[in-house]
Image (cartoon, rainbow, N blue to C red):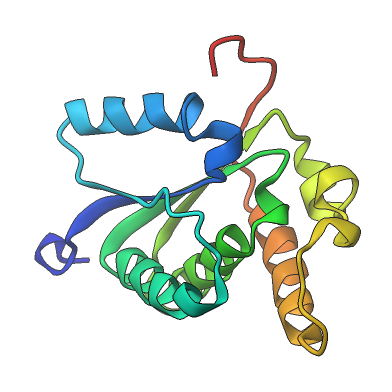
Length: 158
């Protein structure tokens, strides 16, 4: 992969309510200090009239990044934005060798894989008539959990 085609080294996928001001903020700051260009979107605005614009921005950020760090946390699966990012990231991985590093932040990777606890289907925010989204989200969660990654448990300062 040629570095010139990427605008960012890393795309951060995370739920801002869970880790935005703690772990992800520290990670972003330290990556920046180490000289990495990082795409970090904190827009949790999922209003219907703005969602298409946000999705376009996120997709472009993922495509212009060499790798993604996915911070899977308690409320990750309750965010349509996070689940959208996850599906796009994994498509990018399959289609162009995009590097993916999952971080299981205070969640058990097997809960993500088996969709138990906060990753259970009852926690997905879905709109009636869009069962294809639910299928894509569930497949993506299983796929990312199967990649392995870095489990971080009980981190006092995030």
